[in-house]
Length: 219
Image 1 (cartoon, rainbow, N blue to C red):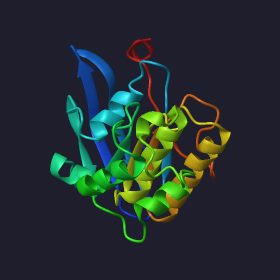
Image 2: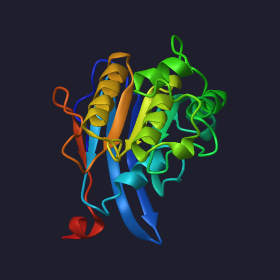
Image 3: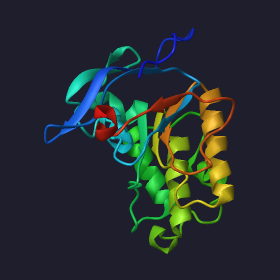
Image 4: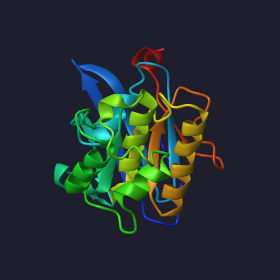
């Protein structure tokens, strides 16, 4: 899939001939696309089309089988990821034995802190005011997801990679995800998100990146 003509701002993320194979079987690609500051792009495709795998490649968790990824015009490297890319996957990356506040402080130690926000303010922004010191294991699945969303607010990463961010959230939580995406885009950030649900980000007319399962490609 090729992205439309470049916008005025330089691309935040570029993929060139990007592909991933598992056991010599194609999972996705080759893909050519760009993501620009202020954009939220929806990754669409059936099960097996490689949506989650693509996000893992873009986050550095998997090495691409072919092609390249540029972040702000430079090759993506592990050294640049922690402060420039934030991944929210099926595994939330938070520790059950810690409280929400402790988890956020740990995240700051790894990825830095965006100016103008504190862990307490982030938790309040996602509806967890008063839960700062409750052990994470006592929280519901939806509340744990909100802790992970609060972490997104704290870190200075311009690029968000969100895999099924609406999972385990009620309608209010889904609306919260959309508000966070809108604010992030207005700040000049960008996001790639996957979603099977009917509550995918709909502000304006978001661009879509369509993936196809290998069998579908060969048809």
